[in-house]
Length: 88
Image: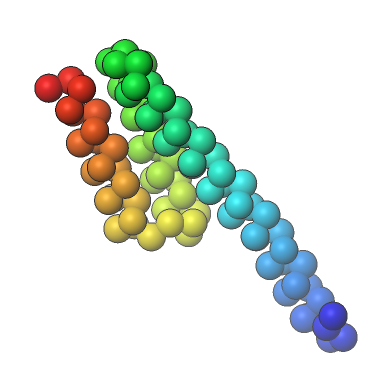
């Protein structure tokens, strides 16, 4: 445990940021899983909505520093390709 006041503050800030990052990552994974479930049902309209939502959440994760922009771009590309397979 740190003795210096500023170090105590940094530990608390790190703890809060870790919780925030975990919450955002969990929501991101849930959104992607819901999209994948919509793909399995082959409901094109529902899958389209879930894809848009997943892309939105991925972009938000990038702006918050949770994901690297290239990683998010790769995930969006892969999700879109899977969506196009059922529609095409």
